[in-house]
Each structure stands twice: as structure tokens, then as C-alpha cells.
Length: 361
Image 1: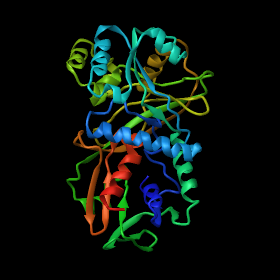
Image 2: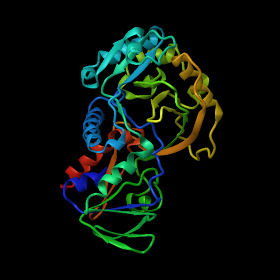
Image 3: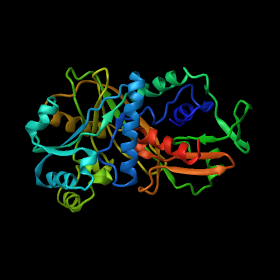
Image 4: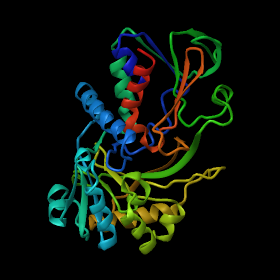
């Protein structure tokens, strides 16, 4: 997205990618443009601006698979409903497109939700793209410009002067601005430039994807455990939910929530867990997948299709939850941008736009 912003503003861009093509958290996610749970203030403003930019870019790059599908969070019982009601009462509820729907209204919007629930929180501003192919689509569009060069299989290893870096092939690049978007790679050059006290941590997650559902899932879907995870839902009602209705043991142990999005091929992307303690596990565990399957089947009222893929991913997250991203000048003409956490797919267009504005592009 930083390359996109720079090319759009008339600059020449060389994008250096350590992999043959991106393989990190930018692909290993839901493809959600997730406005619903964002904290009020800067985080919500960033998400809403990014939502506008995603839609605009999606009109130009249809292969992104942008769709304004909204989301539903079904709730059960008085405690969960009270959290949803508190969300709808927020002063920024209209900006998010919050509405509390009856089960009938929710099923009219998403007929695949045949399970039992008492109400559903709807967020009209949520949207989705295809995460596994979004970067390919963006790059294909960028390559139409003579001002864009993509260099895969290279890693920047050294800052050798103002706006000047050397890669691991020994090649040197001179620029008016160098932006290091390092994802979850926080050691090596990042530590050398930003120091050991970089206010960013790594988070590991587990997700899965099914065979085609065989019918449309017309909205993204979350469960009430997402209330416990996203800052927009902080309230006295949430405190009452946490004390009066603790999470299921597996969900609590793995800091879980349900998020679910239908892919263009009809399959469902489902997750996720959150692991914060290092060293991370190197394998995936079945208990979280079993829990997610149970939750999804209770909402769909039908068996889940066969699981086609399981994976783990790692992203970088600011240790201060109030910060959307860590943006730091680490040398003359060199900036580090990292740590959006689980907001990366949602907020990336607006994060890049802000970088471009602040650097005077």
C-alpha cells in the first residue's frame, strides 16, 4: 500500500520483497475490512478511511474481490445482548453502521444462519477482500506503471547513508525516502535501527479454511467472544459478561474469538487464536479447531464442510493498544512502519496514506 500511494502520487518506486512474493500475515488473514470492533477515535477513523480507500481501489482492481458484505454477530442470552445494546448506544454507532437485529431480520440478511440465537449485532461498514490474492492483484496493477519496479527474493540488510540501503545481493539503492515495512520480522536490521525497546510485539494465531459451503454466506460472521477481544465493546455490560459468563475453557486458554468470512470459491475462512508468550509453538493444536467447528455449526445449524487447510501466522502488534501503527524515523531518509497487529488488512491503505502525507509525498 505504501508503494501504491507513492506511485499514485507520481513517484518512482522500487519495492524490495524478501520472499518470492509475500507469505506473511498479509496473506494469512480473513481478508476482513473490520470496522465493527475498532476503538473509538483514531483507530476507528483510520479504519473508516481505509474502508473508503479499499472500495475505491476495488473499483479499479476488481481482482481484489472487494465486497461491502457487512457483518453479523449473533448473541445469546441477556448478558451478550446487553453488550450488543451498549455498542448500538455508542455515539459513533451510526458511523459504524451498527444495528441490533432480531433473528428473523438477521436471517433475512444472511439466510445461512439457521442456528439458534436471540439477536444479532449488524455492522454495515464491514467489508472483505481476498487475502491470498490481493497482493498479486495490486502488484499487477502497479506493474502497469513505468514508475514501479518489483524486486523479489531480496532483503534490505544495511542502511549505508541518507535514503540509501544495501540488499543481501550487495546491490545499493538511493532514494528520497525509504520505508521499511517489515511485518513480523523485528530482529536483525530492525533491532539495529530501532533499538531493543521497540514498542512492538509478535502475536501468533491459528486459522482454517473449508471446502465450499454450498450456499452463500452473505455477511462476515463473528461470535460474542469477539466482544471480549475488540476495544469497541468495552462497557459495564462487557464487565458483567466476563464475570457472569466466562469463556469456554478452550476459548479462554487460547484467547479465542470466532471470525468467519466466505471466500470467492465458496469456502469459509475461520479463526482464530492469539498466542503472546515466546517462544511460540511450532505446531498447530486441534482443540481450538474443534471449538471453532462447534461454534460455527451452532450458528449455521448444519455440519461444517470438510476442512481444506489449516495454518498458523504471526503478526506484529504495538504494545500500546491505543496506537494504530508504529511509525519511526530510524535514519536520515529512512522510516520504519510496523505493528498494526490484527488491524493490518483493515487499515493498510490509510496507514500508507498517512505515511505519504507525513513524509510530504
